[in-house]
Image (cartoon, rainbow, N blue to C red; front, top):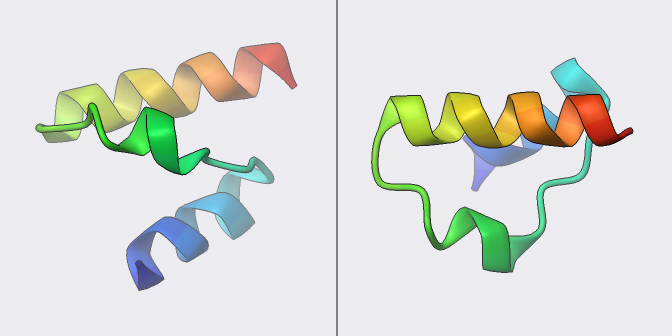
Length: 40
């Protein structure tokens, strides 16, 4: 959970837990972060 909080602070986003549940790889996480950044 600390990693997620650090990512949220670094990229100035909020990662919903329901979206995080589908993340299985680093690539999935990267896609999620990019998606959240473009919608912000």
